[in-house]
Length: 397
Ligand SMILES: Nc1ncnc2c1ncn2[C@@H]1O[C@H](COP(=O)(O)OP(=O)(O)OP(=O)(O)O)[C@@H](O)[C@H]1O
Ligand SMILES: [Mg+2]
Image (cartoon, rainbow, N blue to C red; front, side, top):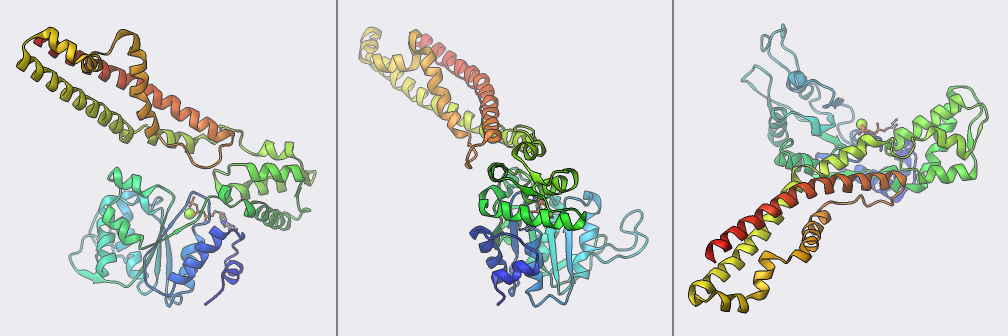
């Protein structure tokens, strides 16, 4: 079996962090089998080298390796691209065409951005994964193929499943083995190593002396969030290599190339959006419903007492705390509200990695957004709920 080090050399993979080595090791181990592999990780972490390693170390290496970017093929043509079509299957299908699954028979297909596959294509894919069978578009003749699938995604597949954009059965079928590539910020020891490699590659490419970072600039490089991971690091190394006359890069120069805190927002906005989507609103509604149920039980207790006892004053005296719980008292109205929002606020998650400036902004954004929803929703529901209870109690008085 080839060693992790020799694989890194062969596939030009730089880095020595334990998590990277583990991912490569896993790829080496699964390569000789036909197990489906799902490569996960943020954008720009280097997912594309994993299926290549798997294919090259497998018995399929002399057959075809086809990489398909599922996110880049229009929904209308993806079935035909993957599975082929019959002549006359749709306007413009002037000839029968073989799809990737037919062409790659005996080889490997890399389905990049698999989370983007339309649901109808997911059904076809599930079938081919389960028994190797597929139909060309416009054909009823079942064909057989022997293809190994390696898929990759940079989206949260559980979220996609929850939103019914991705079939759960297909997810489990694709991810028999999951190879995760961690973000660059969790591979601190690789950052400067990668930068030096890129700097020397670009110096060669543009025939200029290699750029070098001052010690302080190295510290800035290590602390940066690298939302675009290795792709972003590479771009910055290239820009600096081409544009900077002075080949010693200081903190100030480096910072002028790094996106300022808060300008990396697309990803950040996406996170806060997803956190404020239906799932968190649902949590809020659940809480309101639970609270209502508890109040309703208290009310039932109180009315039962009233029915049995008949003396309002006695019941009031014996159930002081219960009545206060349901009605509340004017002076603790605010605390009630505070209490009612706290559990909801906890529902929202905060990114786990160390907070640098950009993270702090994202967390603040998130809470700002979340509190806006909660204030409106919880207050109005809370008020309505109290109003209902008060009305029903008044009826009994
Ligand atoms: N360990 C590494 N050593 C050297 N170059 C790397 C490494 N990892 C990634 N790269 C380079 O970084 C760039 C981005 O990698 P890649 O295209 O594999 O990202 P990705 O994970 O597929 O991202 P996306 O989800 O956006 O498609 C490529 O140019 C790749 O060669
Ligand atoms: Mg990719």
